[in-house]
Image (cartoon, rainbow over all chains, first blue to last red; front, top):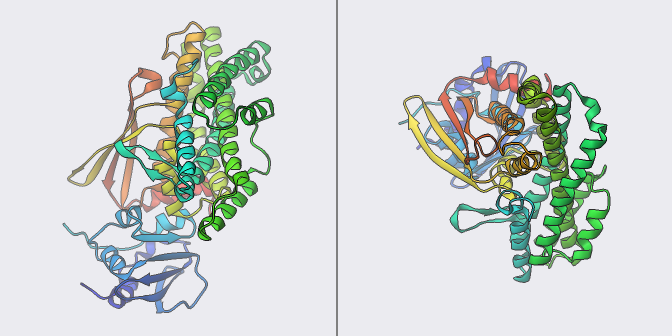
Length: 110
Length: 345
């Protein structure tokens, strides 16, 4: 399984800028579990950047175990299933939470 | 009992369950709810109060839409129709009185005070509800018993909302029946069709942009919980089997009872009409409301298709809705739906 650092650092490469037109957000990943850590994702003018730590005030906070976030971004479990099971929580405007899941080229697994 | 206990009085079952929990000093479940045997859910006071205040808003809007679509906004002041509304609402109040006495839900005088008062949604309902939520959560966090006055506030909120919700629902049924009696069944269908799409987006704006955030439900997890568990406040719901197929998923939702269907059946019968004569005036709005919710809440890796297959209101058979989720890259759909509800950012 990939590490959370590998997954976080891969986000700019799987980001779909054409799906984020006008969607400028700061998103914090506040993670516990196997690899407790915080990561700030900034989406601005079609560019996604990730930095470790909480570097800017977020509009959306995504929390949960790091291993579940790895599962989400590697396509092992769909975001909807993780949120439904309350394994991943999204705190912030509902519409941002739903739109967020469509911004990534997540691999499809069996 | 004038109305069907199964269709129209699930509120009583839930509030009786709340009293049982209080007798066990289980304040956490009283407020937060729990799953029950057989697939039912006791939603808890937090969800029930928010659910019922939401449907108060919805029924008020449905009435307005139907009046607008009918081309007879003046029927809101029609004395014959107002008299019929008051008669049929009185029968609902009588049912509530009977159940409250039978099941000891609240002291009879507490209910009589509510029923005699103006039970319209108070202007400051949202701030009040947020205050009750904070006070309840603080007591639970401290491991303290909930003060009796706070407990009764929750019961009072639920009962007031049930009264008001059903008043507007019955009023809508009375208007629908008048349309059929005065102008024929086709006039009712036309009135609904003229307003169904407006309702579809107006009710989404009302819920997601106004009422739910005001009631403290803004995060996706909270709203999903309200959507998935709040409905058990008045519904007997069964999630049908989920089937996966090449390129998508197929889900069925079954509603065994329907507050709206039960009311409209009775209003139709009391007007000398067939039981399902008014069903289109509820079921078509439900279908568009559901479709908008799917367009707005399904993640963009799916394209949702939603439809009513059959319904209590129109077919006198349990409601069956189908949701087909096709794998897609459907961000444009989500953004368009969000724009319609929240406006362009």
